[in-house]
Length: 175
Image (cartoon, rainbow, N blue to C red):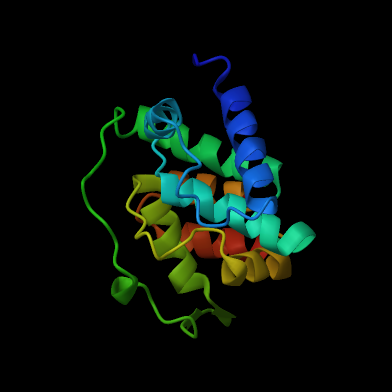
């Protein structure tokens, strides 16, 4: 794998894992080779994050994340990991108890406070294994507001600590 073909490696791994999932191996215990784990680490991903996208893709079909959406989200995380974090993990994890409540709202938009914290955790590679960026609740928010999860990550990256910019994007869809 090199920088010019990482997306092909991602696609091939996603398709291979989806085939295993559809074949009944839904726990991912034997999905990854050491090379697969090294690849995921090189793009700032964990095996659990990757599993979550494959699992939701297989379980929810068109209602779940597509391979393309999964790749676009991974591309934002990979770029952030390499550009901002210099390919170094923070060593931190955002526990579910630190996420705003699912019912928390800002400017009449439930879920948004939670989604902002999750997006920052995703960018930083600090997702708890029991938390997924792009879960069903996130997907419902994105669908309702006609937003793409990868664009939301990019806006979160560009906004830094300025929640107002993220809120404005959620309201208008404009970056």
